Image (cartoon, rainbow, N blue to C red; front, side, top):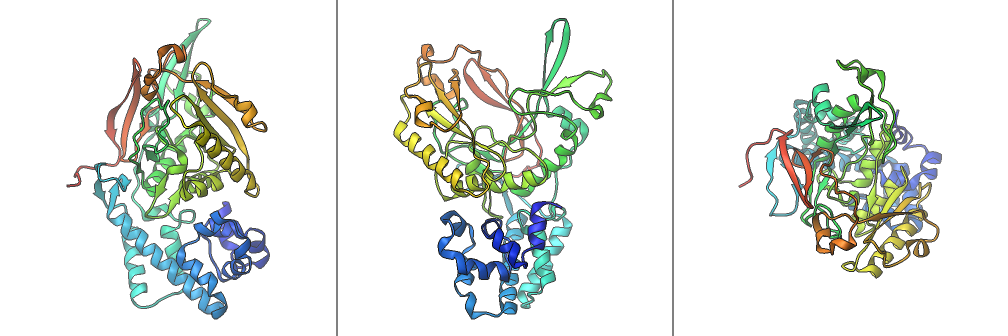
Length: 444
């Protein structure tokens, strides 16, 4: 049983709620006990916790003394059912990818399974007749709560072992006469595009954002992880031999894997992900992945708005967060330093945080500042900028002499496109291979 199910079972236990009130509110697990304790502690709660609470629940918290326990439960149930209906209607007529940019092409698709269609009808009937029972609220949670939902209410992309194997980018080397095989796990990209506008961006990321609907991401993860979990991998260059399951192949090779299946961004920042139908951010994704025993790598340039702030708060409860410190003449360095210091202070203020992993100081051949002096208590990794994408604006003499990779792992973009990113002579592009969501009709 994962942490969210345990919290859901303990939502009416005063001692448990008192110990983990901020988490109950951040994770949107409500009960009369949670509401009453939130009222008594509201003024001392951090702003990121308050802002994560739905406005209707905030209002209920402020008026809690006007209601009995039964009335409170009924109001919470009604809120839960109404949100589930809005969520299910959103996915029944879902634009893929999710976006608020009119320049990004989308198509419309019904993501509900037959079971999801039935649940929507049942909840609509309940809302029309004022039914606010615990059983219906439970159904609502199982259809639409980002941590407690049952994925059978949604359509899934069914992938086979052959698909999973084809999605691995394969390369090999010959070392001392022995051929070694290396695979790179695919990136299921939650967000495409980035608002950071980093001057070194290897893929020249655009500032129009699109997002993969959360149920589709969950479906892809579950379809692929049942195969990839048999691969042992540790992030960033360390390798382990693959397990027996995948050794039962024709050539009986010994494969090694430089990356684990834990990276869900490519030309984006994890803190900017937002499925606005269900209300899921990048921190929610990190929490869910951790609850299922998955790794989740989080690299961000720092706080940009309330959404990114909440995402960082949640993510740092799971794994240490790496921070990107970009240092070029085209950057506003005072802003970058201030942004990172605010982010570091936020991370260290979160109860039971995992801290900052590394500050990745990305710079030209000669850094303009000493990151070690600015961020004295943090671990610094230096990374020279390579000639690719937006970095081509700098003199080649200032860029790394390292060979620019001519390939990156396969990526599944928010619209379902399986692409092969490549960099030819400093020019980044994505070669589309197929679409996994079976989408045909373009938005007019």
